[in-house]
Image (tube, rainbow, N blue to C red; front, side, top):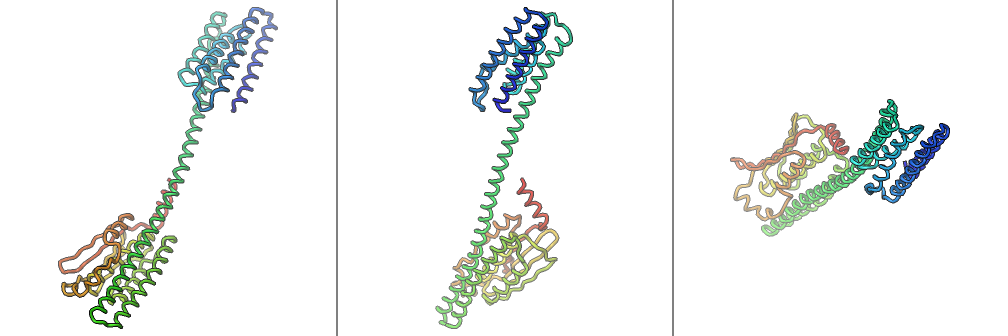
Length: 403
């Protein structure tokens, strides 16, 4: 209820109480009681005018002024006293209105003090006026206390409404921040993927160019050098195609890992003239795009490193689907010292983003990476990811967005 509407209803109540009380006293031919009631109602009227002015001049967000406590106290004290006089029961309505406002708009301690003052004045007036009936000693104080409780309930409702509005605003802010975070995460994801694709492509391109330079420097074999450069050109074209494919996979959130690994094995065999044995075991299942791309990047990086350090040795690429995880392994024989010397010209090229980058990518999605040689001179890279069903993953992501 707005301030103006509240005061219209209070004014109507005051006028009605005043007319009812005065007419009752006139009808009962009690001039002495009438004089007391007229004076008391006049005092109440002045206090209510002061009350209205104080409320009007107090900003909505500011705490109540002390003058309001005084005005409410006067209204409660005088109306409580008049309510126990002959034909003055009507005035208890004004007391209830004042205590209701005190319970709603005034701090708790002053509100209880004002209500206690009203009850005390009512009881004293009842005793002095010899109005010791149940109505005087119980009914009138109960009406005052009821007004206080109504005001307290209004206060609680207002606080709840304010808290709900604040919570709603905070929820909107959190949702806005979450949307911004999702956008930034997606941009970071795309940027990381483009970086990894280009790092792999440019690294392989660097190897081919340095191989061509080594051929021309060592033997001046033009045909072989042209073949290597043609491979480099094809690698650059494949890099662009792979970038588009990766972005498409990121947007659709699906990627056929099995087909991509077989295609990668074929490309590596043709580019580096090294045999790649690609084997896929277990029950093939669809993986999230982030998991598929991460495993694909591990395979790319491991095979590029094999081309740098393995001197054309065969590569074993194996993808195992088990009940609780997916395991990718890339194994190759490391070059002997003599072979390494022959290919030193190619080893200066940076072919990718390294073991640290692969491990970081896997850790972000709950995976792990191990890499290293064994005693027989075989280098093995193993990447593992836990199995998360697509339906369960979609449900989890939906809950995260709702939260």
